Amino acid sequence: MSRIKPFLAAPLLALLLVGTALAQTVPQSQPQVQLSFAPVVKQTAPAVVNIYASKLVQRRETPFAGDPFFEQFFQQYGRTTPRIENSLGSGVIVGADGLVVSNYHVVGNATEITVELSDRREFKAHVLLADEEADLAVLQLEDAADLPALTLRNSDTVEVGDLVLAIGNPFGVGQTVSSGIISGLGRSTLSIGAGRGYFVQTDAAINPGNSGGALVDMNGALVGINTAILTRGGGSNGIGFAIPANLVQNFIDQAVAGQTRYQRPWAGVTGQAMDAAMAEAMGLPRPEGVVISGLHPDSPFKAAGLGVGDVILSLEGEPTDSPQEVMFRLAALGIGKDVTVRYLQDGDEETATLSLITPPDSPARDARTLTGDLVLRGLGISRINPAVAAEMDLPDGLSDGVVVTEVAGLAARVGLQPGDVITAINGTPVTTPEDVETLSQPARGRWAIEVQRRGDPLLLRFRI
Image 1 (spheres, rainbow, N blue to C red):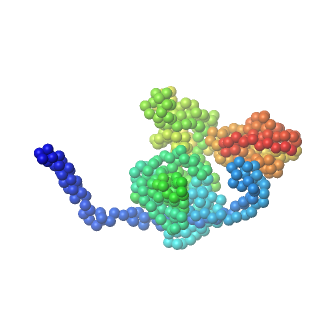
Image 2 (cartoon, rainbow, N blue to C red; image 1 turned 45 degrees about the horizontal axis):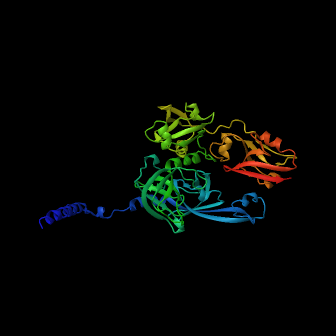
Image 3 (spheres, rainbow, N blue to C red; image 1 turned 45 degrees about the vertical axis):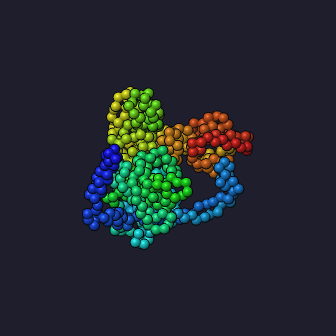
């Protein structure tokens, strides 16, 4: 027994200490007992709206519809029938005069938009600015005034572990609030829809219908616009993504300024994220930054003194650990700004000032439409330059060649589409619109057109 007593005394003492600690944490007042998110919800929920959008689409009836290979060759064949498609989502009021932010995939190309407030008032709305890659849209409510609006928080100040609320209209059941935390920052390896974005991750439940809704902090400020989830069954698995408020603010500024097309600063740079092997080879203590692998001659990074092989470490003091993060930082800062870039060059850390510019429209695009007795008659083409690449949403890093801008007649029937980059005709490489026009003669014989479609090679064979 003498051996057992000391052994039992230790856990007994521990229990007494735990009990004392618990007694000290018992709520001592009514406010401590009634911990609640209700004050934040009352402040923010009136500024989150339901959006009902309709659009008219032309569906082409073809036996190859849905086929991953043959459908692309028969898009111009078959009878078209108009259909009305409806979408449901959420939005956030960011201006008392009825300025609303939502997702592009909720209202993009909509012909009719109705917005319902939390107090059941309804307004018609029209799109001021929309961008598919950013998956953002700004709406203006008609005849609206004195509406509740949210302020935007600097999303660079958000930290993992911060409490947040997601507010929206999941599955159309009505306005719903879910709570969680910021569970990740800088999610830039995702490709959501047409976007190649940079997202804030949260475990607050987000479901279909939440798209375009608000992610707010405990002060009622907008942290981001809910946009997507990772799921296998369609419901929330606790992995949701929101577009950071800094990018949303830049988007709003452009809409208010009257822009009809979202303009991003042009980098003129290609690169890759630093990994452990590269860091070791460069003598760095840890992987960080983006290694520059290519620079356009007119790139503002080149003008600032950076070169191939240099490592971009930060922009305006914020880290840049992926190419997507570099583009996010630039887009959030906006065109016309002078930005401090910190980088490594030959092992030494340097700083420089970077001027953010629009994509240059040089060399001349030499746009033309092919006519006459040519095999590709009806084809509109343009030389690729940075401005054309931005307008046509061409793959990153593509800054030369010939792109299809429009198709009609024979050019459409052989399967060419706007956005195709023509690389060769009958085995002869093409680099200018003049090359395409010359190689399209005569309009007889067997033909092989090599193109890049959304970054993938494609060969079109036909006989005239």
